[in-house]
Amino acid sequence: MGDIMLNSKLVNTLSEYFKAQLEKHRMNASIMLNNPQGIPEHTDWMESVEKEIEKMAEYDEKLHMVTKYLK
Image (cartoon, rainbow, N blue to C red):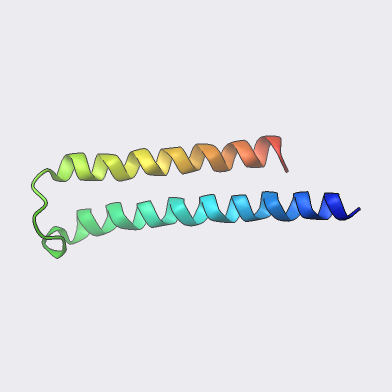
């Protein structure tokens, strides 16, 4: 019984971590798009936003995998 509870807690912790990382990168992209002067010395906005989107996709996929295969 203890192992099942621990596994469930680990899976829930992973899920919450992936959600938080996804939100962090979504916020970064949103800030870049809505307030570009707020981040100095960025010359390649498209590349910067694309990197945030790549991170969002990475954590979205991880969240999907945890939800589909481990919950």
